[in-house]
Structure formats: structure tokens, C-alpha cells
Image 1 (cartoon, each protein chain N blue to C red):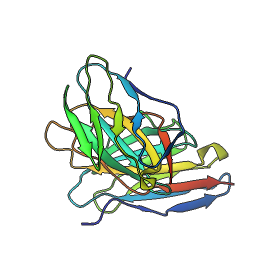
Image 2: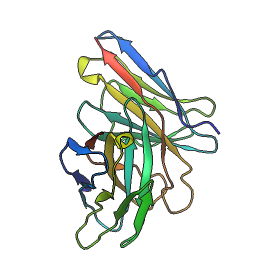
Image 3: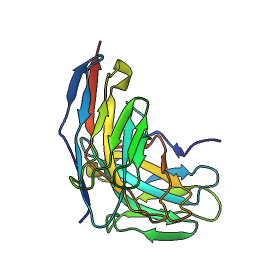
Length: 113
Length: 116
């Protein structure tokens, strides 16, 4: 079946450190891949997405590249800020109207000043 | 353009009571999804609805849970005879769902259900 696996958290970093959160997926065909962010007490917000192999999604300094050969979509940021502290979810879905998202378990990021 | 609106934000129910969670999708969105987030877990898909139709309920527990999205008004997720294990955050998402790409799903802030 389709699934998403994320690195276990929590991830604790100092401000301006480099961030990588690993995400790998198992899927048939060619899904679209997403990173969502959930700030404390809030719902999920789409952070970035990629819809085909080798696409790079980017937003707010975060980047992730759709790697079909390694079935990965790792999230990176060159210099994290305290305000980036949140839970990050990797997800996939298929390019078909109405298809639900399949989420990883989430990775908690805590950034200290 | 208001986002996805869920209410209540917090709901406390005693065991055996009914919980009713509401979700108003974004304007122009006709597809609604419900997800459940258990403590320390990711979001699990429950049900996908369009107006007056349940399209996919493969993630819904077989008993006590039901969902609807009437022609007028919000989508409702109903949990009858709640038990402590139903305590979770319930998120609603909506999308346009047109075209061949599952366009971006926008999430509400969730309803946090606590069963005491």
C-alpha cells in the first residue's frame, strides 16, 4: 500500500543551524508530494509541494526535491529561526481529483535562540 | 475569503454522549475531507465527501461514526456514544477538486475532542 515514513523527532536545533527532515514514500505510480507545517494549536498549512520527479518545491526558505530514484522528498532549510518551531508532516496523494492525502507521523522541530 | 472554518475548537463530552463537529469549506470548494490526529500520531484519513454524497469512507470506523455534507450548510462529523479512545484532534480540509490534479487542500484549525 501507499505510505510515508518520516524521521523520528524531536529535532532540536539552534537558531541559524541547517535543517534536514527525511521523508521517504512507498507508492505505485507517480504521486504528488507535500510538506505541511502545523504550528502549536493550529491546523495544517501547506509549506511546499512537488508534482513530478525532479521538481523542487520551495517556500519561506524551505526546499524539497522529488527524488523518484530514491523515493524521497527530504525537507531542508539553510538557516532555521525560532519561528520555524512546529510539527512538519510529509504527505502524498495522487493526481486525481478528490484523492485524500496520506501523511507521515510528523516530525517536531524545536529551534532555540 | 475566509478559510476552512471548524467549530467548536474544543469539545468536551462524557462517555456515552454524542459529539457533533462542524466544518464549513472555503468558498468555491466542493470537496471536504475529514482527518483524525491521535496524540503523537500523524493525520489519518477518515472520509471524503462532496455535496450530498459520501465518496470514500474507507477510513471511518465501522460503528458510531458518520459524516454528511448536505446541500446547504456545513459538513458534519458525528460520533455517537463517545469513548475515551475517541479523544483526538479532528481536522477538516477542503479543495476545489477540479481538473486532474488534486489541487491544494486547505485545512481548518481543527476540533479537539476530549472524552471524560
